[in-house]
Length: 162
Image (cartoon, rainbow, N blue to C red; front, side, top):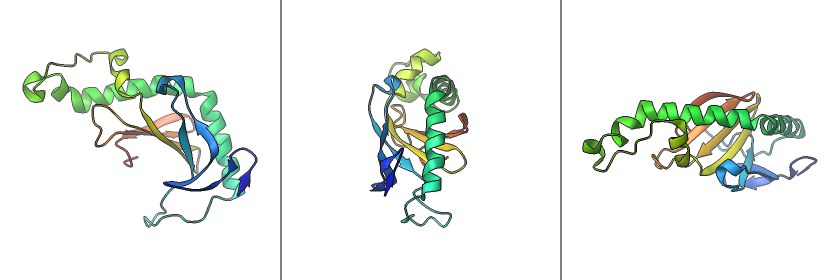
């Protein structure tokens, strides 16, 4: 299927994607695929039908708004990941008795951002929803995923938890 914004839309390894990719200097310029629509339906069945043009148009609007607001979203993303670190990980990484290594001394957002620079993917769904997944260097097993609705971070969790 061909779309005016997305270009050729076809089935990919995790759903459907077009020719447009996402990159940003914060993520070291790495280009990642943009998945269009959810991968699974409510019954956890793989979605095999591509998104219709109306959905693709809505995804394009969501994405363009996301790009226009990304610098503000990124500041919030950095703050929320630091807060998550403090809540879930600091007790381990800042305690040499627990971790077996010297404390990381992560006591500010600026010291934490080096661990969230590896972007995995971006998925656009209905209702102005975007999910960004990141390979979190301090928890590569679970990673990080952000559910962003109408340019506001609504939820932070491990990959596939939002």
